[in-house]
Length: 470
Ligand code: 5AD
Ligand code: SF4
Image (cartoon, rainbow, N blue to C red; front, side, top):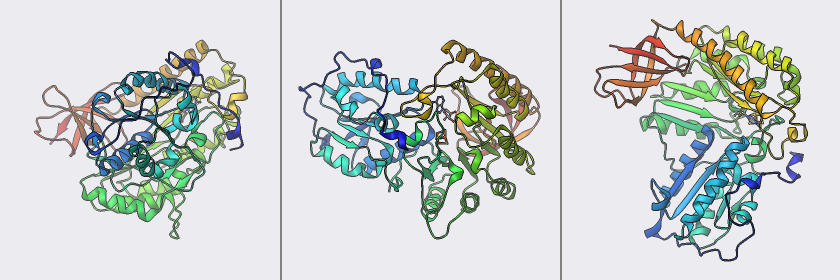
């Protein structure tokens, strides 16, 4: 955390602004009166951000706001931002430029999430038409901050990350009617050298197990059958109550709630991934057959430089644990290519790891230097061109692996939670417990939200196709 005191190095040149100096002619903030309480909320980034937005929306609805579909129709425009890679952060600034036009109509504009935390008050200086800057560790104070905005305050901030609180709301406006996200641990105490999350989301805070289970029971009563437990390092969960529930015990307790049919969890950190998690999956079929276990690199030297706290061999031991389970468990991962100093041979170690593990799917990224992170001081020596080449080689290798794996699934039967309906007649989609997307044909009239059996008849590298078995 020492690095937090260092100045931020964010590329402001991407700001699409006509002037860069503070303006004194800031138009007055429109009153967020009962007649004008309409909000537009746009979200970028990870599932944690998606879920934070669901909670923020719930909070606003309970304060008498209405959610609207366009910024034009809103009196309050909120933008929940992501800064995990530079490109994501750049988007925020160009979007703020677009919002500038809209504020002439006297709207209140707020920046939430990771870019808000990272940039802080600098956002007011560069985009003086913004009225609220609030990082995720301060969402607990949002009602207070909204009160200040409603009272006409033009500059409201929530930038404290020094907190042991989690963000809980009375009302959450969930986007998906069947699968509910539920954050069980916020922030991150790991210190991966490339990652902004410990700076933008603050230290690790676990939510009380009784509060989590209460919410799961409410979700089941509302008709949700799938719960996805969220955290940057979800399996580092440390129950703050005297019950001291382990993560694996929490998984089992959530699965025991009447009405819950599937329990997912993401993202797991390899160092905290222990045998009891696999044992819980083996014991309880409601816990999904899927573990997302980011490896980042297949080279122990690079992993050390990334401060990932495990070696290639230690990671492979965790994989062996999962593969030894009494039912097949899908494994997915994240990989970064072109980390400072990554040699061709080290990159090839990542390729050989893909061959060895045979992931079911992966997310891959080019290394992107981020403000405040320890790796910022390392020489970002690999050219953009070379990073792109490595990314393409990696993705190509994985495509081959996935095609071959998926081809072996033809003829198998899976249970699918139906979550999509195509405009084409009789075409539906959904996910298996192993989180494979399945498109399938059925004459069924209303399948959304139901669990159906599908026989696989065809595959692509990224999805399966099949037919409803009745
Ligand atoms: N550059 C590239 N990828 C990154 N990730 C996190 N930080 C960076 C960065 N600075 C990737 C990691 C992480 C995923 C969510 O984003 O792979 O697991
Ligand atoms: Fe970032 Fe590492 Fe924490 Fe994941 S575990 S959020 S990569 S610091």
